[in-house]
Length: 403
Image (tube, rainbow, N blue to C red; front, side):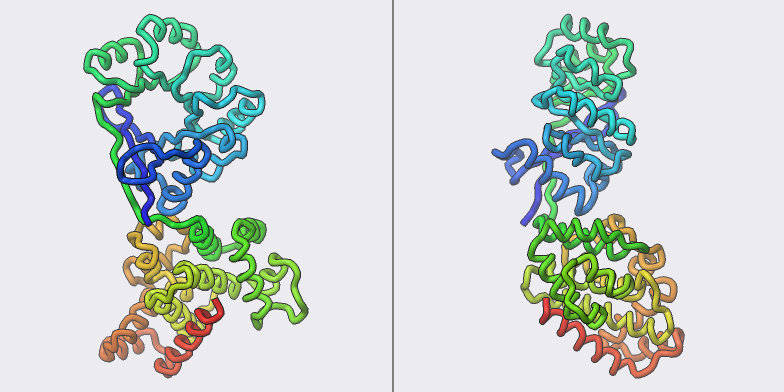
């Protein structure tokens, strides 16, 4: 399945692209789906921001995204980077004291807010101290109405954005009136983009993988991710309770079960379990390969006394082909994960000691014995590669059987 998003450029007065408004779509027809605004915003962020980042869609320019009442009141925008996103408050959102408090809070956290399709109603005046952009539909109001409103808000340092600009004459008049940004068919229509889409459960799994790669685990956050997926919670508890690292007595709390394992082993466990479930139970040779590589690299690192927290060699092997499983460019995938620099360098350039271990793993897989012997001598201290690899294969098979 694929996720669809339309992006419409927003231009500066000199006709250079300033940013993009992102619009959720449910197919290639480039039309808004028959769903409510909350669902549209949630799907847009889940399918595009959480997977690859809106920055990759907007060429690192600001992304203007519509937020409805519920998504604002539940502080959903705080899950995204304030440096890359402009929060557009839809004209249908009630101007309540609760919303005002949210806007004040978001503004204090560095988020930039925009009033979308602004209707000039005085009820919004109290929001203006927290607003950066005012978007005005220039087909909805005549020049006199717009001029009167601009005089009324002249004391606020607002960026004026003209929507639905369709003619060169409109563009010139609006520039003279003080508009800074412009959007409309005169410049460009929304452009359709599509990318591989993850289900919400797979997005949760990737979130777990991300957390497992951090130096310090946030157990509360891990528990929160699991709570969004009952099936995942059950599998994690079952695995942890059956693990040699878990306490011998029955464990009633997922958080306590995780703590009992110890962070290094828990990180390996979370990453491999999440990856093992990305294929939705369908056997995938790429998945098996990722697990074998993870265990093989980890065992080699143990022989070299390189065990660490996070388990760098394990994660290097595990992430060596995850980008193929989720069908995303490797560099884009790695940009979204807080992996150590050494791991990223090993994956992208096969550099450093981790890179050498990965090279040895790949050479052994291919049966390139001349290269294998050369790398083994460079690393030194590695013994009985065939036995180690068979151990890794048995381990991976066991993991896939349990998951």
